[in-house]
Length: 161
Length: 266
Image (cartoon, rainbow over all chains, first blue to last red; front, side, top):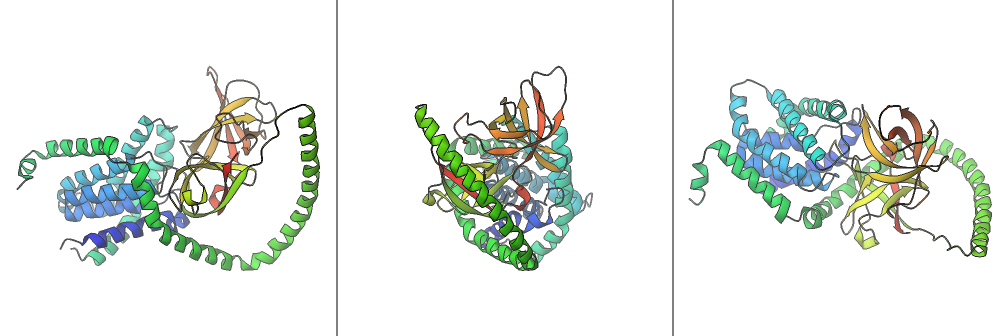
């Protein structure tokens, strides 16, 4: 069953609020899990590429509105990532090549890596080594570690298989 | 179906077409910063304020036992500061008299607006905070944000009742600065070092020492002159470079930041 639009909007708002408030208390080395990215992964895997694209764009918008990223950067990366994951993710998931955590880890890593290059292109003071050690790797692992719990929560809420 | 032609395309070409379309829309047509992002902040404002209220009350409740002791400490501090304030007032008046004798323009007093933090950055990359004052209180993009006499950041986006502040440790920040002891100028920027966020100063020449205080230079007219940015904690020695870099410990403790002051008029 496809989820309702209002429920999706409610989930995105809820996850954004949690991302800006409660998750600051579970930071490790100033890194918190990216639960908006988990939402994109969940919808891409379970409902396909169009949902991946739209939810990616919306989550990107909400994430950008509450952070200092250049306009359009996160929307672009999340929506494209959602589209791509919706396209190949279901197949990868069904083949049991990677579990939920594995897919979340690889997807987060790719998205964060792509964001790094986009920020770098837009004239940011970022070094690859420092970004890899202090943001890309820890954020990917932390997001992957949290993803099974949120997947279960979302499955219950949305009544998916 | 209208989209039949699109569905018949190969997946890779579909991806290419869609990514190009998204890019063009974002780059040229969708006014993200001007309308959409402020609208989203306005939508998130009531729940964010509610969360901040709950967490602030919880923090106060948990800290209740420390309050008596803190109160004692603060009373002693207030007495000390009252004495210092008197001396400063005296020095200020003397400064005014001397300025008028030398026919120099009088320094203007800053107009400020206090604001509470209602949310922190949603991403792991940037270092921004959301505050509960917006354009309706006179807050505009580009206004500097301080905590006491310490520089905290600047407003980068403002909606009616909230604004987004980029902290000085954000990787996009560039602040014209001065080494207080030597008066040498440099640029302060935000950086990540391992699991920490720090500020660094890039300067051309001269000696910098650990413990040197770095202040805003006032160049560029965004940040007022003389606000404390932080203290040098390490000097990076690299030969054959046109500039030198030193690491600064910011004067503001960003992890426990709860309220700030926006300078609305300089």
